[in-house]
Structures are given as structure tokens and as C-alpha cells.
Length: 332
Image 1: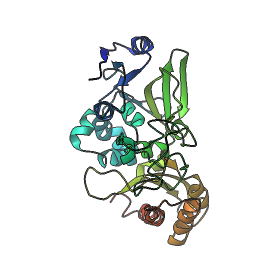
Image 2: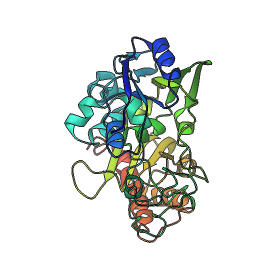
Image 3: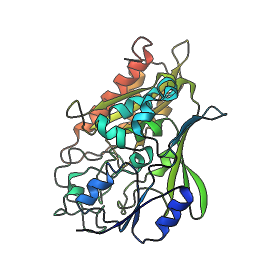
Image 4: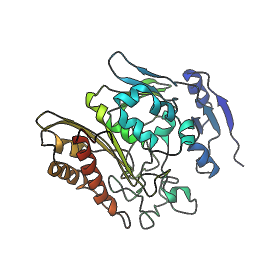
């Protein structure tokens, strides 16, 4: 049995103080990922700091941004009026993830911090650089059907499992952090890291830092955002490929702006900057959409069993953009 202490933080300063008292401390949100990892002895914290009562609000700011507290439950975010009306891509992404019971427990901060669902990461008999740096990666030559085709390395081909994070990446969200050295903000697209030779380092968080909120900036054309998720079964399955997409098309059928992010294809939510650039100032038609998808996936590298993801991602991008360009189908 692994022994650990438990303490419920009354506020952010007390959470930081409690975390600092233990060498291996973890913040506990809904526990939908951390508790599973503790059962498998992949995570072995000596102290759990419960932060579920902190930063639970959702508010519209004077500058038009939406601030979501890290302690807000996923269900509460998906059902919030401002999210559903102004940022439907986020509501759709959350609803497509997990089961209703898990969404009722999971918090925004915990979702951001969840770890990979790679089979080899969960198997302590397998070599996994995320569990033990330098031990090797059995997924490279093993069953890597769910593995990354973008941004992977010889040290790790795992993918980030979150749907919510894909939408927040596309929405240009910003994460607010508090630590013993003060407050700072990080763009969502920069928060998670690619594996390189240190796949055990998954975010830019410093020791003891706590996520307190996420800001989504105002974006008028986000009202017509779409989230598409392709998975092995219709319920409670992680994405093989997913896409959060928004495009702004003027009256002449020219694309003014675009926001795209892919899930299920990389170690982090993958912002499709190359595809966005290929779309701007182009006609909103099938040829443009296919070309943009091909540009984004041109650097993809397949593993032994996941090469299908490259063509699948191309098709998902093209089909979703075509849906968005058709006013009658944008909210289907």
C-alpha cells in the first residue's frame, strides 16, 4: 500500500503552502485521471492537496473575454450559456469526451493536466520513457495505432487525450498560473510540450504552480465553431483524430480568418498553423480545404500501425471546413 496524506486547501495561498511541505505533492481536482494512475502505482504522491473548491466560477470579463475557473466542472462549462452561444466548439468538445458521470466530476484544471492514455504507459512491464526517462519506448515497435503522427520523437509517440484542450488551443486561450514566485500567464498553445528526449516533462509548469483560470478571448466567428471527433466507438473512446475548427468567410466567399487544432495526432493539442495560413485570403471551396489539409499533414510521419491517421486527418479537416462554409450545415 502507498501511504499519502490528504489536505483540503481553503484558498490558493494555502494550496501553495501545503504543496510546498512535501517533496512529492500533487494537486487533486476531480481525480478522474490521477486516482486511476495512483491505483496503477504510476503516480505515487506522498501528499494530495484537494483544490476542488477553488476557482470554480465562470465569468464574462469587461474586455469580452470569458474566464473559466480551473475548478469549474466540465459539465458546468459545457452547459454555460456564454460557452454554448459564443464558443460552441468548446461545449461540443467537452460533451464528446468521456461519460456524463466523469464530466460531472472532472475539472478544467485536471483536464488540462491529464496524462496520456498510451497502453505502454499504463503497463509497468513495458519500457516507457514517460514513466522512467531513458528506459526506452516499446510503443515505437509495438501496437501504436493510437500513437502520434506529428511532433513525435524516438523517445515517445504517445498522444494527448483531451478533447477540451483541443478546443481551447483553437480558441487562443490563455492559462493563468500562481506559484510561490507569483503569477504568470501562458498561451494555451505553449503550455503542453512535445516529447523530444524528455517525454516525462509534459508541460511548462514550474514546481508547485497551480492552474487557477483559463481565459478565452473574444472571437466573433467562434460562434460558428465545429468539433469533429473520429473514434473506434460512438461513446467513451479517445480520439483517433479530432478537429476544432472555425472559419470566417466574407460575403464574396473568401476566407478572412481561420482557427484549427487537431487532437489524437500529437503529444499535445496540435494547432494547425500551416493550414490556417493556407486558408486565409483563399476561396472557401473544396480545393482550398483539401490543399490546406495536405499542407498541415505534409510533415506527418506514420508509425507501424497508425499511418491511416494521416489520410483520416486530411479528410476530417476538409469535410469539417466544408460544413462550416455551408451556413445551413455549420451547426449540424
